[in-house]
Structures are given as structure tokens and as C-alpha cells.
Length: 206
Image: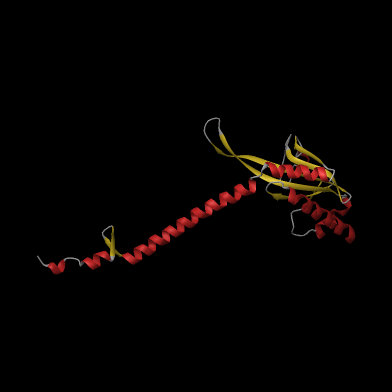
């Protein structure tokens, strides 16, 4: 036997055999590490996205209580649910084209800076996947909606006065804006002030 034909032990330790091919161990380890980082990053991204979405859509009883307390302090009204409250806004984002009896939640109404104001939570529930005969999976998207009564005479001026703080839309004598996510007490006054400021600037520019 010619011992010179046998692979040297050191050489065997420095290579990895894959499908009868010798790959330098260093290259193999680098490739394996790259795959681990790639899939680990993708998995972490999925977990983070799911956690972030859950945080955005979660809301505790204490946050609902804060909405009720805000309404009480300012002499406003609070209703946990208003059946058909979203029907008046049908036909434009974030509401459906046609609705009948569509509820709004956590509806707060009152007067602010001399104007009638309203805010509520709209829940868009859609079927996303069939879970078998007679069963389905749904996804709920939440929107916090804010409105202030406004005269039609300022409609054109509002378009010029609007800024990037949120989308704007006239609807039946109301100027409304909305954000994706749950209605929270800390957002109510800033959003209503935003709408009132837009209307004030529009009135000044006429």
C-alpha cells in the first residue's frame, strides 16, 4: 500500500465533504453563518412585525376609561357603541363604499374651540381566509376618526391650508381626519386642534 496516496489527516480536518465535493471548512462555515443570519433576520423581522401590529391594535380597559374620563372632564358625551354611526361617511376612505348599520365605537361628541367635534373608532372587519366548511378567519383593521363641523364656504381654502399632519376630507358639513390604529385619549385633543387650526387658517386666508 502506498501511504502517500492516503489523505493527510490535517487536510481532512480542513475540508468538509458535501456530495463528494471537498469544500474548505472556512468557506463552509462562512456560508452556514450567512444562511443563519439571513433566516434569523427574516424570522426576527416577522416576529417584530407581528409584535408591533399587536401593540398597535391592543388597548386595555384603562385606556377606554381614560377616554370616558376625558369626555366627563370636558362636558362631552361618550357612547361605547353607535349602531349605524359610520353610514354617513360611506363612499370614501377609510370607510366602505356602501354601508348599512355599520357601527362606530367609543364615540365622543361635544364642543371644542367653538365648534362641534366628534371622534370615534371605526373597525374594518374582513374575511381573509377560509378555515374550513362554515368557518372563516377575519382580520380587523382599526381607525381613529376625528371630525369638526365646517362650513362649505371654506372647502377650497382648507385644501390650500392643509399640512402633512393627517389626511383631510370634507363630508356632509364636517372636516374629518383619521389615523390607523386604536382611538386613544392622548390623541383626541391634538387631532381636534389640528382640524380646528386648519379651519382657522382657511378662514384667515379668505
